[in-house]
Length: 99
Length: 509
Image 1 (tube, helix red, strand yellow):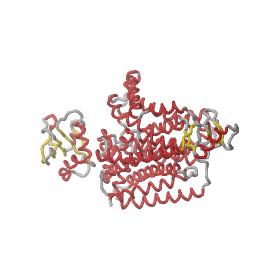
Image 2 (tube, chains in turn red, green):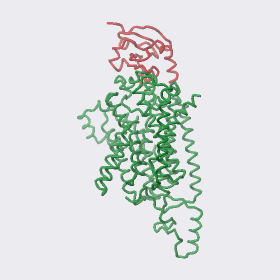
Image 3 (cartoon, chains in turn green, brown):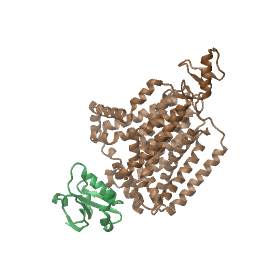
Image 4 (cartoon, rainbow over the protein chains, first blue to last red):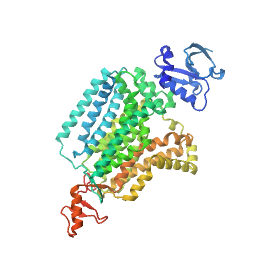
């Protein structure tokens, strides 16, 4: 957990202090997807982090955090997103592209 | 410095609670058990009250800092403590349970040895908590993903602290009550940052308090040896220690459940209105800790209703229930505001599909699966066969004046267990997963209260003093055929017991 919190140290500085942001990650095995999201939610609280692969409401929010451990996922997960900044360690700031 | 502030933030409610509790209880006996009971009960009640007041202040004020919180806490808890001490001084001593006697006795050195062992185990429980916390400082999954996460929202969220209850966070159960997150957020407010160690301190505190409360309550009601055995039984249960250190809300909830049952047992006599008030307050704090608190209230209400049907003093029982409800009101009002104004409905309620529920109720395989899981838990985690062996060896012996109260305790506990069982039968979640992730925690909630009921039911073992031993030897060897004054031979087992010391709080029912 401590390592995960450190992973988000830099991006936390540019994120709003409260509100709702989207979340996208590369597919992981077993329950790791949920674990990675839960770690992210804990690390970035009091922001509400909504996983785009679970909750369709996440597509409404313009700011999205990318949490990629292996590779940047394909279009199925990245639909309507553009990269804003790479914070290293697989952490990206993304933005919803206006359609 | 940070540890000193943490210590002081807990000290205020703990001391106030410990000073307040005696004014609600019968006058003390001054024994170690009596003091232990007051401290372990008062500490939990104080912390519960601190969580409530923090929630109240958080609801009223957007920016809450230590500078704003401390004066409020200081005035409130000091006033309560002062009033409680003044009230306690004015009260005449009530009857309070004294040490019991029993047909089975052991020499005093056994008590001293087991007492020493118990204190070593209690220290071991603290060390276990420290070791498990150093291994997982953020606690188990539910601790950081639910309880501590919500504490972070409340502490770090400022005026947006209510985001913790957003329907968008349905995965982390925003409807879960706030005793634990409130306490943790309160501690963080005092020290000014979200230190990882604070939830761990709260967790160890409740674990040790539960052991202390059980041991002292049983010692008060059934004698010191029973109390020590009950404390040892709990402190020797690894699953209890593990869940305690995991920073989940189950051990705190079990603590408030145990407090409620112990106080209800103390409050048998009609004049013990204050004990009923306190029992109501602890039950309310249970509801403020976990949603299962509602099941606790329903179990108590059902037990009370059945008891009242057969009781000759029905009007008196209604009055006692009134005092209980009055005591429960402060936490229940906070809970009602929380549930009605702040949070979305519970996920299990949302997923409720009547047709599917009937289908699951009619499926015998689900009952078998739940029963098998419960049996595994009871045998391998809670070591219930050991308790069964104890019962077989010593037998059942409920005191005459306590039968109704003990049966009611068992009845309420059984109803709560039945409700838990039934929740698994009808759950919409995959049953094996649901059992695997939560059954052990639910059993841990019940276990301290189960031990209390068990030791109130099993035949008590009394401690023989040197005088007793000498008197027995003289009586046996002399074959005088006449009784030593103040003593009689127990016909049942032929062992020596004191006369006229049958204990019952408030006498026969």
